Length: 337
Image (cartoon, rainbow, N blue to C red; front, side, top):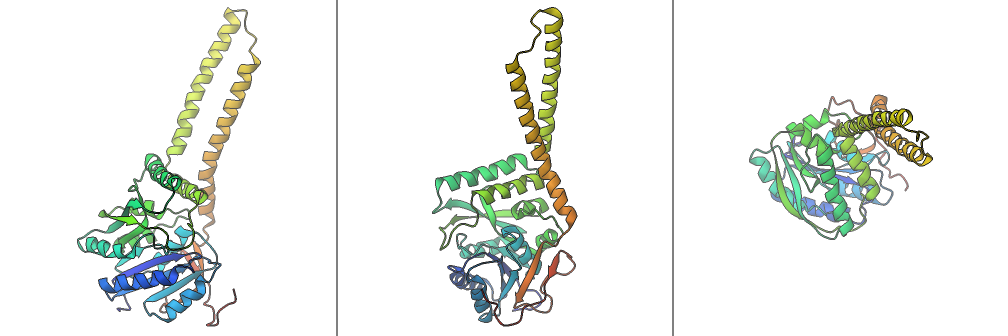
């Protein structure tokens, strides 16, 4: 394998994947060997609390193509993938989860499209086996809501499973925001993109790392980070209610001057106060989401911290990004769990 720049870098974020990680490595290795011997697999341990770190050390010790990054704590899926992108040296970079719901064999089709001249080849799910109706409904609602509100269209029924050309990876490395939705960021950079249809499999083992709470948080990141539509909605509704208030004032004055029925009813006052008060809290919440992200960006903390690197040459991370603080490497002895 070329040490300077392999043809393929495959990034695998891991969080408590002890039940599946060895099988994942085996299937990935078989798939990639059939494509090219010039590849690397970068496993990013996102603060796992099970035996995943020890298993990754064993995998790396047995394969020169396997590399391991251990983050200092759980930073979240999108940050873990971003860490892998920082270290990837390949001419093309593939993102794939460790749970084997996205079949590694689809990578061969992605590489074919890349060789045809496409810069981004994303996996688009034609079927989703083993998922509840509620999960399927929320996933559909997730993409349609983001596309309705976001200024950047995201292909429907896609995740982070994709291949990206080095030009796209370099563009992503220049995007320094903390609240990240990589599938939206990849759409934003543009270039020539296409889809590969595939059937999503059931999880090989373990539980989903994206429950409803995290899906809602991811949707919020996608909407707020790539759209000012919520603020525009707030402005429009505020103007509408201002107009209604003017009409209400005119009505009250007319009642006072032209009729004897000028004492306002308490029901109308109660409803008006509750309605306007509720709207004010909603508007403050929307604006607070944007202000909170401004606050997070202004702190300019590193995107993630590295606790351990395995299998890399002297400087594994892409140079010049200035977005990562690397903790000195651990000793060869395994720390206790």
